[in-house]
Length: 121
Image (tube, rainbow, N blue to C red):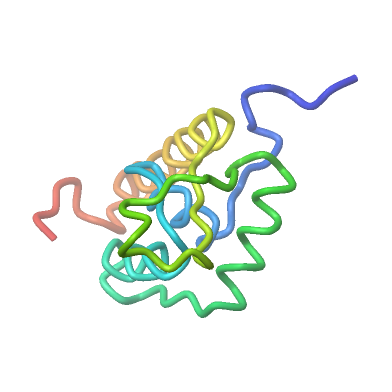
């Protein structure tokens, strides 16, 4: 019997995995660009070091959430040693499912007046 194709069996995601998938949802990136995007997305509250990032990426490659890419923005300007990663269709389904799960948790907190219903940041 195979794994479910919706990826719900992979939930909940750890914050680093969730944010790496978010960063890759906008396009292919190399490791340092992923780290920078995660820092921007979390307003600096999650700073991924190389060990955490590459450990996550290795696990994500094995589970099929991401794959390596041969894409290069400009082969003459890019370091050929850089590895680029892209999110897979499974990864897209999983990050959407996790976003829904987190949204439900936020809604529950709002219903209990632990958070305002609408926030401008």
